[in-house]
Image (cartoon, rainbow, N blue to C red; front, side, top):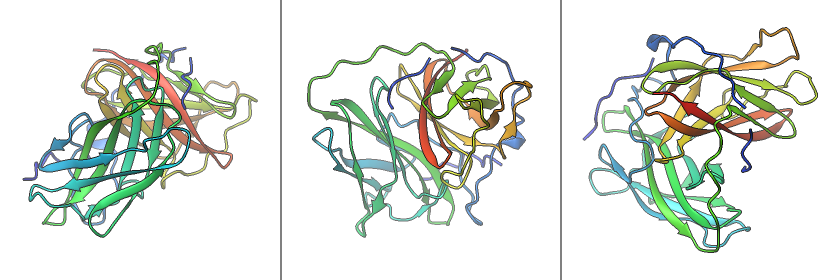
Length: 286
């Protein structure tokens, strides 16, 4: 039941576009991830379906109250209709969970732990009610010891009065009090590309970048129309920008956007020992 796809070697939105084009990435330079001797498939699914390639996201529960910690839980079932309990770590974690509201105005990224019976449990605080989707990203270890990289999702309503936020303008920029991000790549649907995001600090100093999940950054995007998720992996070490102006750092990612439209990229970086989550709305051309 495993599809071999080949191996690939918060909430306030910010605002103005990067627009500097960069060349398409060489597919042979796509990121590799250390899974030991296991071979891992290309990622399957975009988190909008509960089932794909033999795996099912089951029994999803989100906290029923907002503004206070609550439990999230779910299970991944295999094609044998029983809990999948063997996983490989991806960016240091065996399970990445993204909880996003339909309007993408709320985003949470958590790493639950698995019980002996295969149920994943974690703690989550949701700031507001609304229509949410839990997206589980994992690499399931199959019977041959190799990995199936899968994204599954399911919807959960958190009751209460709320109004969807408008679709953000695709400015290509995001930031907060400590770090600013500027997308320099014109992304195109269906193309493997090298995505460059420039980091700067509001005070003009060079950002002091630490590690998060064993690498320079974590980047996940969501289509504002379909809700489809895309995970983009970092490529190598960050380099200094080449503007000759205020010091900055350029982060490189392998990106392959499946369809055109507006996305919100959620960039997570550790700067000056603080984890920043930056929403960056971008437009992907056809």
